[in-house]
Image 1: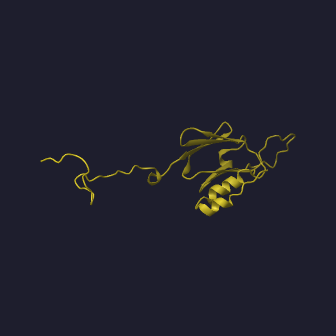
Image 2: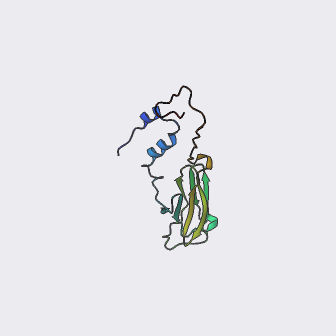
Length: 156
């Protein structure tokens, strides 16, 4: 596996520590577990959807928590102790799935339908952080100090 050394970037950048940490950890699997499977879809310019396959889990057995730049989806299934399985093929084990979120991404909705936990996300950049056009004002009545007329007829 090829590793990248980000230490030269630390000398000339400020505040990008989180990005470099994300890049370093991107190649490492989440606890080596790929369960439950999930999809991430981009619905528009600033809209996203995560769908997690949680067949067998009820709404009260799932938890969604959003922290700063992190979305945590976890599930815990209550097992009936009086059941004796002859074959147990359903994967109903507890799980925790973490998703790194960019700045200003929030959860707008979550629903459980047909065994899928669907989480809608949206990036909402605050108004003060959006690009804005700066008006340039010119005072047409005043000449800059020390300016001289170079060409043109002088009206008499």
